[in-house]
Length: 392
Image (cartoon, rainbow, N blue to C red; front, side, top):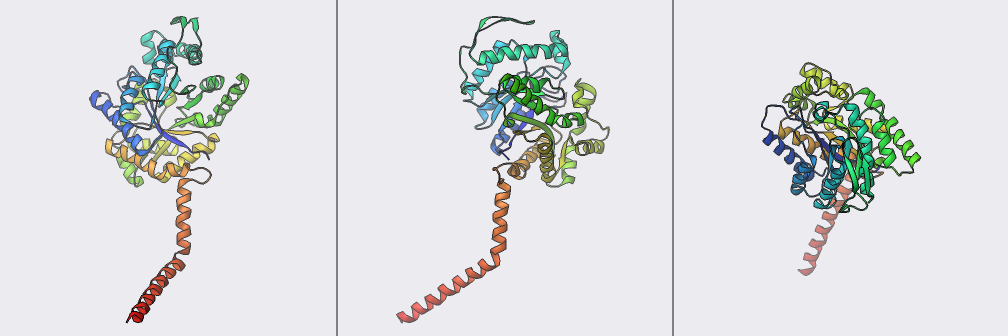
């Protein structure tokens, strides 16, 4: 397989009532930690209500994170483009592309929380309709066009970018998808990537994976756009530890708060999670195929399951959460980097398989080679004794 990239999708999720300043600092520290661990991407959410997903401007957060990191790419996950003037969305992303020297990515979506859009007088239907209009404008601006267009929310008059992107011809652009074909249809039309946010959250989302990419390819062919599975990103849930029992103990810290948010606060039915008690929640994640709470072997099996169901994709994004305390959360990411990534990277022969094969070859010849080593020592010792005898 092609090298599978790994990253995080950082909404983020923090318990309401806690210190938001410290919570945001933990988010920055997490991205810094992922950069050190060799993760490829971090996608940052945009939300404006409900007191849990605290980042209102992914672009501001990305600028701060870029100064703390060296290699990891940073994307908006996603910019709710119906909330914004499309010209300013494009302008801000081009600026970030220059500031990060090409580490910027734009994710586009309609916005997941109705409690956000309602404050702008927009219904969920409105945001989806506006997204298609605004995305078309944004793509035209990136192509260097001048745009004059009246939308329901904005009036553009000879609008154009005054900077070209740092990345030539443009940075990565991806469209969010949950269960409906809307996201895949737009991704195909514009030759953009696909962010499958609900890929593992429901059985319907899992079952739709292969269908979604089929929609992308069909629309891309219709519009003459090139698309690649390398630009398809799947979002899923994981927490791993050295043992399954330790992972279960770790998530006692915060998984109930996370479930409560989706069950009772966020009006986001695509994230329908089940379970009222701790063990029911753990079992739902594991047994419903939603994700993996357990060991690195469980995590590898989940990635492989998604690969097989989808037919192949480009990046596995771990949905960030605070099921465990900060130390255990960072340890989970470390274990995945150390023991999961190598099985999906390296080409036709993965990094893990290459080193395991080298180990097996050494094992299979160890006895003979060890004997040869001992014989070499004996031979050289004998020669030395002969040299001494000749000199005397």
